[in-house]
Image (cartoon, rainbow, N blue to C red; front, top):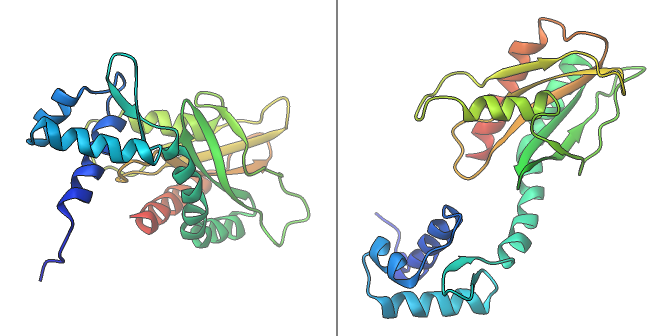
Length: 216
């Protein structure tokens, strides 16, 4: 039996999704057309969402996602970390390398979870909260590789490896998370050495698939 739902709440969520997908924002008329409702309904929805800081309207009257959404988003990271930790822990222990979950945040890549191996004498330290540009290392480039996949394709996650950086002496490897709505990211490892061993690739791809499944 289908669970009973709230039509008003459903429409409010649809408004947020439409605004999140629009760079320029949307007018009341545009929202009404996309929702298939009259303008009065949209005005009420926007007024309610504005009261909670989830929507704002600019001088021209176009509605956009409000800063209140960011406060909600910050609460999501602990849930993502919890779901990803088993696969990250297994990856770190298997490879003796520091494993991480990295997500897209705005125009940057943001490290939201890190697991270090327990049995190694030396390993790379990697900090939760670290930000970097998407083209800066293997993690970001794995995400960019996923963006280049044909729409609707369901291949294995793109795997990207990078040699040792001059600054840190560490190399890295990452595979993108695929099939997740509203989440862009990757699972990766950083390790000491000049090159990523061949066995790392399949294991990182497997871990990325496991994390994506845990987040669905």
